[in-house]
Image 1: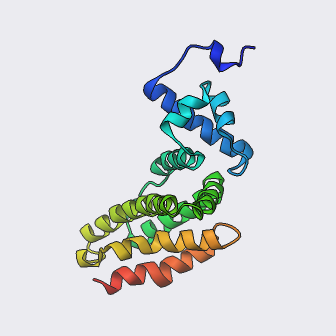
Image 2: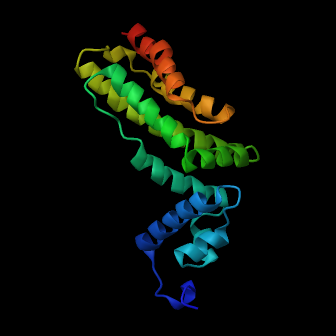
Image 3: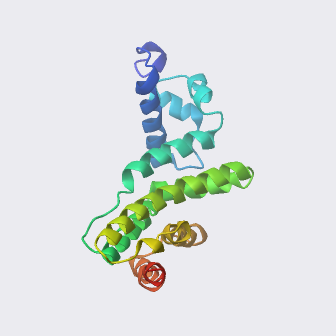
Length: 197
C-alpha cells in the first residue's frame, strides 16, 4: 500500500508539525469540524495518532492551533490611507473569513467549549486577540495621520469591532453581510474612536 504513512520516511520536528496542521485544514475543508477525526488527520499527514496526541491531547486543541495558523496569516491590517476605510476593510475581511471553513470550525470549537469553559475562553482570547492586534495597527496609523487621538485607543474600543462581527456570526445563521458590517463600522466602531478623541 503506497499511501500507508508507515512505509514512508518519518518526518520530525517542524516539518511534521506543519504537515499535521495542513492535514487538519484539508480534513476540515473536506469533512467539516463535526466529522474531523484524529485518525483521518494522521493518515493525511502520514504519521501516527500517538504523534498527534503527544502534541495535542484533545481534538479541539489540534483544531484550535490549525485555526490560529490560518487566522495569523489571514487577518492582515489594511492600509487604504484612511481610518474609516481601513476599519471597514478589516471588518469585511473578518466577515469573509467567517463565511468559510474557518467560521464553521470556530462554531464547532465554541460548541465543544461549552463542556470546557477554559477552552472556550482560550478560543475567545485567540480570535479577539488577533482582531485587536489588527485594529491596533489600523488605529496607530490613524493617530499618525491625525484622524483620531491616541487617548481613544483603549482595549475596549479595540475589541469592539471584532466582538460585534463575531457575535453576529456566532448567534446568526451566517457571517454578517457587507451591508451590516458597513452599518456596524459607521454607526458604532468609528463613532466610538472619534468620541474618545
